[in-house]
Each structure stands twice: as C-alpha cells, then as structure tokens.
Image 1 (cartoon, chains in turn orange, yellow):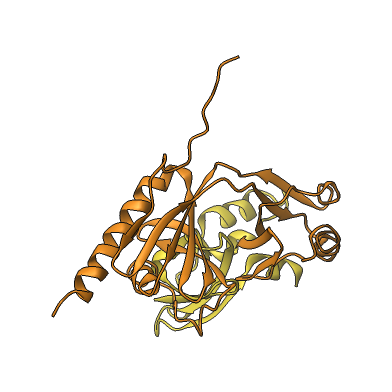
Image 2 (spheres, chains in turn yellow, cyan; image 1 turned 90 degrees about the vertical axis):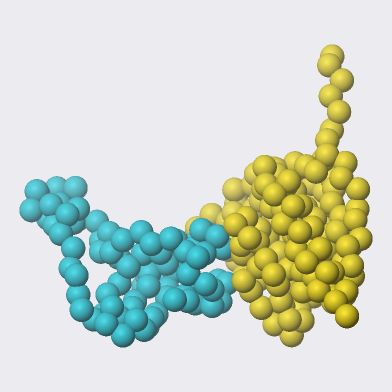
Length: 184
Length: 88
C-alpha cells in the first residue's frame, strides 16, 4: 500500500501577521454540500433540526451548534462543516462531499475589514455584515464564500485550485493597508 | 448598473452574466410546429422601453434571474428568481 500524505490547500503555509491583520489557513474540516430537492424544504429543515439542532439556513445565514456549522452557500445550497451528513438527509437533498475541495483562510484583526473591503464589493460594516452573516461574492476575480466569525474576524473559502491566488490577493491587500496605516 | 439579487441583495454588474431574452423560458410544445420553433429560437423583440431578460448570478449565489428593465431610462424595475416565476 502506498503511503499518501495529506496536504492542505496552501501546502503548509504558516500564519502571517501583516499590520493589524493575521492571515492563516484553516485546515481539515469535513465539508458536505447540501442541495435540497424541490418541494421538500420544510422536511429537510425538520430532519436537520433533529440531526444537528439547526435547520436549513436562509440566504446569508450561518447556523451553529457545538462544532457543527451550516453555512448558506448559494442559491438553494448550504455547506455543512465539521459534521457527518445524517442518513435521514439523503432522501431530501443531494449531498456531496466537499472536504479537500475548498481552501479556507481566516483573516482576524482590527484591519481585517479594511483588507477585505479592498477586495470584495460588499458592505462589510459590522451593522450590515454582522457576526454569523455569510455571503457569496467576488474577492478580486475569485468567487468566494465570505463569513464573519467574529467582530474582527472573517473566514474566506475559495475553490482549492484558487488557493495560491487567494493567498496572494489577501496578503497583497493586507500589505497595502498596513503601508497606509504606517504613513506619518 | 446594479442588480438586487433576491438572495444576495444589491450587487455590482460584474457579478452577473447576461444570457438573453426571458422569452427563452417559454419553450413551445415539441409538436408546436416550425413557425413556433423558429420564433422561439430566432425572433427577438428589441424594445425601446421595458424589456425582460435572463441573468446569471455566477459570481454570487449562482441563481438564474429574470430582470425587468427599461432600455430607455436604464431603470431596473424588478429582479426575480426564475423559480418564483415557475411557481406563479
């Protein structure tokens, strides 16, 4: 048997602190996309409620209970994070394993909002984009899922193939924000 | 130009792709005959005024949208999900 080594999307990229933002790869969560079949939305929400303690998220919503998290991920789509898809869901929705298909980066710090505001054309103010809110939007030219995890923290998810570009975009923007902050 | 996606809210035009006239949703019966199919495939109105077309929110939620807009004033009157139209 060949011994295969698991490698993260950014291949062991260490965390960096640039000015007032810390950028770090988030690794290893199990990810499953849930796409409800037509006409069974209410049943699916009930089944999810029983299995995880939360239903199917509304657009822009993130639901969490313990470790398990469910992020709205697009039109009639949600991403279940850090939980095993329950058997009862299989009849109500199309479930696909997305683990390893996405690259996830966290941006935490006082400058996180300013850094992302340079890249994403959405209103990131805390009152418009509160903790637990999520959006699908562009980051530069990359289609990402952007979630606010804390007042000063975001998690950005992009296709794994875009990992290096995502890292380049956020680090470059962070350096510009830091340079501006350093001006006398 | 900005479109208000029913899922995502008001977003910039760069996130959307134009597909064509919303009449593409009204597919004729397979047996409707060559005239109806010719009209469906090839004939388009080009109104000075209110028009309806299909847009895809590809760099967002991925939904297909029917946009009602005015080609004279550039006003966007409505943005609906294609599914909402199907249901109604």
